[in-house]
Length: 485
Image 1 (cartoon, rainbow, N blue to C red):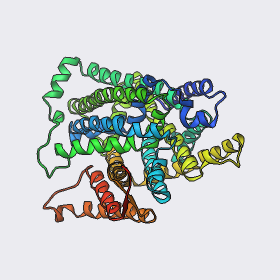
Image 2 (image 1 turned 90 degrees about the horizontal axis):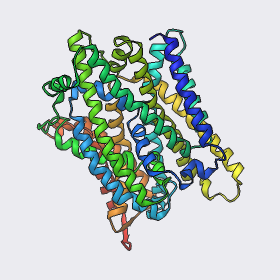
Image 3 (image 1 turned 120 degrees about the vertical axis):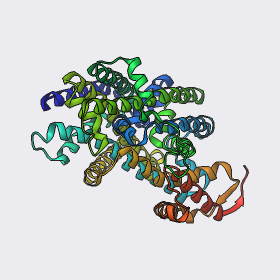
Image 4 (image 1 turned 180 degrees about the vertical axis):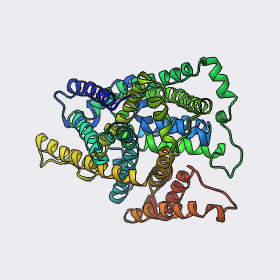
């Protein structure tokens, strides 16, 4: 594919999103932006959440990750099932009962001001870093295959992408995103299926034959029984369950979509439907990863040092222009939902949790919109800066970095919510910030020296659980009188 074709494909897809925005954002209010007027169809949300939860990271990074981790990621996905069940049966009833717009306002009701601000801060930190990692992938592809040809700096490429996202989320917010996510999920899934088909055709094989090749290859190994290994099955299952709980159930971006559904019953239908689709789609992505490595072995292609680049390299440089265009559309479809949802949820969290915009009686609707617009633009600038910095330091698979960072930033949220839900105590609220800062620091120390401290044991993504336990223990030390429970 030549750079002009890639750019035209990107712009054509973006125009489609702007068309949807124009349709959905008419007569939008702050309530429309934050919770979609509580009128989102549950089945549309369930389907659209696939694209939002997977993003460009899963689309590009997981296939390349198969070379070093095989299918062990699938055990993480199986763990998701348990996590999503907890979300549907424990967290969602709580959020709907309290009629929350920001899920972190629960912490204020439960513990107090400082706990509330600590939880909201960790979400903002987590989402800024996570969204930047996800956006980096698509922007980097556009940079390498389009803008480098025209000597346009990476920072300018990021700026263009951020401006486009800013414009189509500016007014409609969550209502717009519910529908654009649906379109983007469809294109992403089609790209996965067609990409597998193109590779099979290029090798002169068939789906049954390729399936047999994958099954009998080393790439298909799912279960690792060595407890020292980061891929140890119990680590993966536990990590998957808690990653799902924190990165979906304790995440404003994902829960904001669920809270835009009319009733708890429909929201639970959404979550269980989403879970089933998610498991299947992740298996397809791992299958694609194995197919990509089998292709490189047979054709004699050198695997790039940064395996995130494997899928785009094969699709764009080896499979022809149609396959390259299909890949590009799939990548854009996977990357846009993580970017638009992040920007909307960050705006919601800061506006509600730090500015108290929903409670301000001194501002009219028009003035509140002006404040929201300013917050929206500010977070867009922050994301731009973090993406540029990340490109300079990126040295391994983005999916690996993403889950590692999540272990540090979501762990305190896990501990706060677990203590609030299951312990009949209040806490000394003013000391909570000290606990949630100390916990990730201690986890970093444990992770850095775990092989020395624990007889060769190396922490994987289960560090998230350790972080949550340390936070929980710190809150227990700060406990005060019992409450009605």
